[in-house]
Image (cartoon, rainbow, N blue to C red; front, side, top):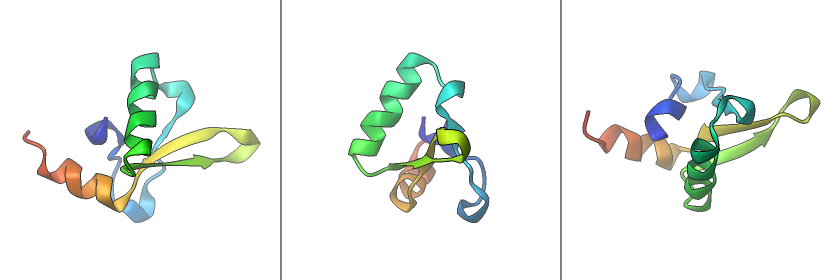
Length: 65
């Protein structure tokens, strides 16, 4: 999920909408949120988005390819 949520530079990142996630992916995002690696943001018309935090980006860069 860290790789999937990495959609480019932090300043341009929009993350992923909950409607674009499978149930297992949504669970993973919530687990990553609890660890402080993912943030949750409410968007237009009360949509919910998951984005990487700075810590999530750092950890994602350390993962093997």
